[in-house]
Length: 151
Ligand SMILES: [Cu+2]
Image 1 (cartoon, rainbow, N blue to C red):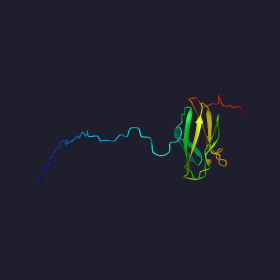
Image 2: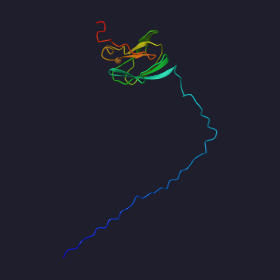
Image 3: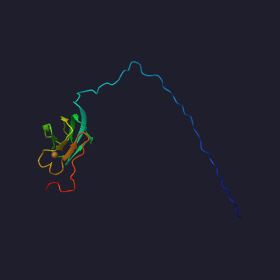
Image 4: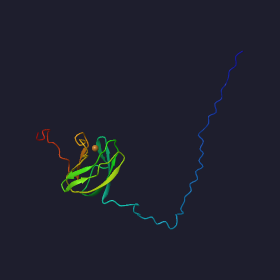
C-alpha cells in the first residue's frame, strides 16, 4: 500500500504593505532665528587645525595649507610627554608647553607661503619620527632631485 503524498506549495506573492504615511510637516518653529550663530566659547584666531601627538608621530587634521593665521589645537594622544614646536620663516619660538598624556594646548601661528617644520622638542622625539613638514600655499614640498641631497 503506497500513498502518494502531495505537498502543496502555497506560493505567497510579495506582500506590499505599503502603508506609507508621509507627513509633510510644514510647520516651522516660530521665532527661532538661529542664523549663523557663532560657536560658543572663546574664538581662536584663524582656522582651527587639530594636531595629534602620539608615540611618536605628529598628525595634522589637514594636509594642505594656505597662508594665514592658524590655531593649532594640540592634543597629546600618546603616553609619553610631548609638545609641538613650529619652526619656519617668520615663525620662531612657537611651541606649546610640554603636555602630559591627554592634555592639550592651543598654539597660534601665522604661516606664509613657506615650508615649516612641525616637531616635538621633547627629548629625542624629533629624531625618532615626531617631525613633519608643512608646505603652505600650494608650494610643493622640496624633493630630492635624484637621491643625492648634498650628502
Ligand atoms: Cu614627543
